[in-house]
Length: 162
Image 1 (cartoon, rainbow, N blue to C red):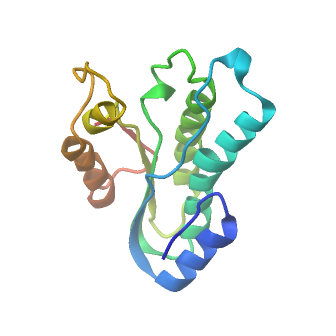
Image 2 (cartoon, rainbow, N blue to C red; image 1 turned 45 degrees about the vertical axis):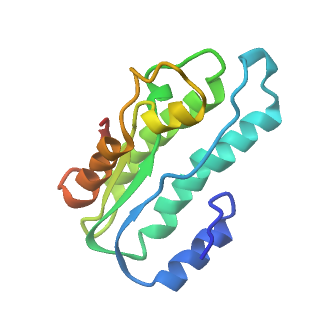
């Protein structure tokens, strides 16, 4: 099933088809990448609607479908703590998602844990983007271990940095 997290109804249909589940991991979402003076209202709206509200809704609608003691994990990223020129919109949504996660974990029912993984640049992504310097990247396999820790661990309300 294809799910478009920009569309709340798409998320609801996914959960309806899945039924009861133990864990959800969302690594979806995007945002505008432009210098601040070039970001339009629409750029911010798209960024907020996709990466932030899309994942917020994955959590909100998922609480009714995740089994007791289950886990919901979303994805922010390094730009929440180390912004760059051109990252204002994405830094905003990453930081917002991290704040939301801490609050949502306080209200999640039935022992459901809510965390967010905030990976650094992923080596394979840097290569795909044509970067010749991958020294500040972390291999995808290492990043994946942070998601495993979120799903199988006991922590909640955490920003997990691989």
